[in-house]
Image (cartoon, rainbow, N blue to C red):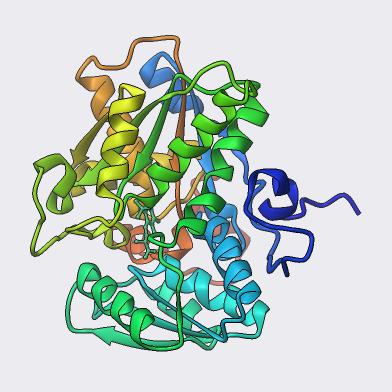
Length: 351
Ligand code: F0G
């Protein structure tokens, strides 16, 4: 009887809803803030992981999608559309089911993880694989929403940002104040925009005494904000953040500059190292894009940019099961044994 009610009910007075708004929810949010022991030791800081893979569809997108679909329903929409590298489409498809709506999703052909494709399919989305990258998909989705009866639920829709800002509220509510530093992966730059908005709101109302410095990390092959120019053919193994022209670019720069933070890049090798460390040493299985925040923290620590003793939160944005190929790749094949305890014990190194 006391389960978490979802972000709209939990933060109703800070979101653009009224008593008559038809709330569409899967009880998203209320995700674990997990102390990261190994990362804390490595950095000399108090590091926490905000585990957004624990959301109903396995990523932070659910926070924004409960708002976007709720508002679309309130406005009488019967169909929604999004461009996606996979997680937004999985979330849109699930929430559209809850709302009794049709969902259409545009994904870059061959560049979305299998688990995410499976989610969109099983939730009955109409899927088009676009012969182009995410940026092309977004251009197409915008055009369709302007010319046809279908509501756009990408993070260029401001209610998405409203929903996603609740993650910052939860962190302050749990820690008692804002952390010193907040670290995020950056793709289309909606999430860093949302966290910054949430932290500013809480500090403005005196719920928190301060705001954190915002540190964002892009993948090296897809780092337009770091480079200061659009990347025409973005590449990275972290397909979720394979984006060359982020829609919320200017808001990300504002978050960086107003907070006294920075936006840097991490290589695919650094991402995979952090991905394996999180799973093997912290017990937290995330998808590769999510590990960009932790890879960035470790890079910054190696560069001497992390003063000891600080309180740091890294958001890990999506569940590792979304993209299991990277967990299996390079790992040894499990050995097969007969139903025999002596052999099994020997193979397990117990005997
Ligand atoms: N991490 C994951 C797992 C993501 O799916 C995304 C974005 C990001 C980080 C970056 O967040 O775009 O707000 O800067 N995924 C979008 C999608 C683009 O379509 O699912 P951002």
